[in-house]
Image (cartoon, rainbow, N blue to C red):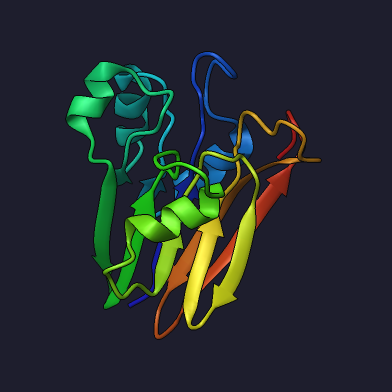
Length: 169
């Protein structure tokens, strides 16, 4: 059985956008699960995403106190036999966002690490570990395009970014 997961982070609603972009909504319609790596901003934004499917989420540094009480700091998921770690990546000192995310799971054997915070899309392999940051679908900062991720799990775990321009499908 194949599983399709939409991966997002740093949606910052309603500060950076009033709602999720149409390109993302298209993929959410056919998702088996949604992973959000933090920075919704508030619980209303989280609840809205939960109306669209099964959500696995962590809190980020910009999330309000209500979300910090509702969501964990980090999450360990087993999806079709693959271990996925999810963390925002903001906690810790003197290291890059990616390094802080890796440190959050230093005692775990993961197949995939998902993190956010930097708004910079990342997809790379390191000693059998897929390291993945979906970027942001609403706040691209210095990136050329908005982005989110798709993970497809069957016999293997495959990830890809979906890049798009504002207002485009």
